[in-house]
Image (cartoon, rainbow, N blue to C red):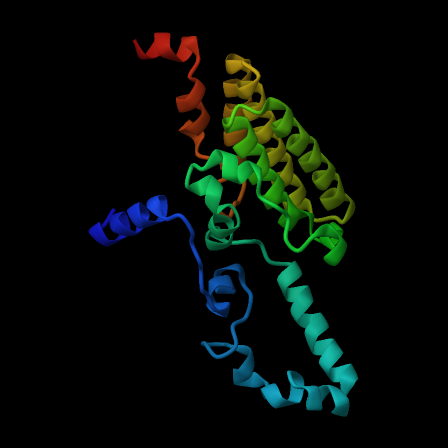
Length: 227
């Protein structure tokens, strides 16, 4: 790791509050078109024809179709590592209690989360791992059940890739719940199987570092082998 990145890591670890400012480019890796970059939307469209109140008054059907197309493009994309890191920043910083308290924003009543189970799953996963690593087995169990329900929604909506990924997330959270409840051997077995499943799939950022929970609750068998 370069000195600059190491310094950035130290600052993030010690910061009491973090504000992230980003543009459309953060989603480019996921396949979401930018606006003014190479291949950007405004390279082939005039913004005043599509993204103004005057454009909507002049041709509402065209504007609605354009925004519907944009939504369809984003819906088909997967979060990239930058999205995952930002969505679960408390988890990435090892602030387990904060991760366990992450709220779903916007609130469920203000946003159609049922259409995007893969997005809501990021919140459930962070809360579940945070709860488990804080020693709250019951809280982790609640989030594991929530993830299983979200996996069913993804399967029903035929988002097969995300149904598989959410199922792996659910198993990871089930594993840390076992750890928190004192079932260390079962915990590490579940996490190893989940890590192997994740390794066998195309993925967009690691769900959980393989050694995190083994380091936290390493089994007697592991210790004997190491000796």
